[in-house]
Image (cartoon, rainbow, N blue to C red):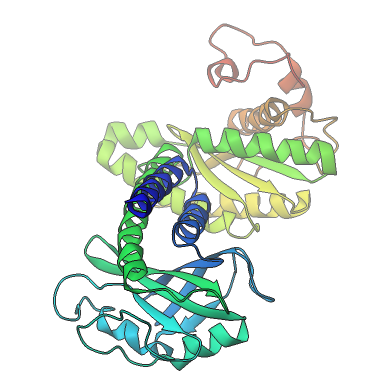
Length: 388
């Protein structure tokens, strides 16, 4: 009875820990470590089956890792054909009906005590060789099924000389795998919600919230490590005329088309974030590339925007800490400079980007008070003055 109580507590603890995970990595680690502790193992791994690549990819290794085993490996994967037991359920053909049970492998390759009665499983010499190579005596493998499909596996091992897993352990591992599947499903739902929270629904680009967070982080890196941060602010010209003449559905297509152009140009700057700020306003945020590279990409963006079938090009302003724009101690300061450059490009009907610190009176414009309560810079939420 005491053992049953301990396992019930372990199931509850695993479910609670996975529910508290915020990121996929936290969820994977909680799953592997919780299952390892629940089964009295020394090591555990969580892996996902990638059908399109025909491989089993390790997401996390937890517990007592052997030499060469990384906690979150970048490229630890194994061809599915090396694991004949996987073929039993990889394509939803469950052996004997129902979902697959967990099973035990031993370092000597002999059947574990209390092995399942329904059909002998293929001898997996790859797992046996791995157990021996890493000083482990046995392992229990539990398939993870998500949304009715084989998702991956939970693997828990014990060191050589420790008691070998039995049938009860395998049955318990099957229960743990179900708990892990529920936790993974919850994490995936949370990831989808987070994605929606930081994504513009029309264009699929990042939204203003994502820009604000990334820009704050980028400016912090600029202040602490001297990293170059550049911001390109764009205003799509002619959207109102398109909406008035052709309707909002056509205007939305223009926004989507320009979003694709922005994404294409942003890809020319490693790691750049392409975003729609709202309405006809877009931006590119780059961390690392030199200011000259950002300006060249901005020029390419302006040229491509002019060639769009509808609209009237784009007004584009650039501000980069790689230029002579004075100290940038806050995200607001950099945004205000890029916005002022874009404001100047709009007023001049420029077909090229206006660059803070290189063109005109952008810095003075950014620092001057609004000319009226309706000054568009105030409406954009970037009032002059304040934190620089």
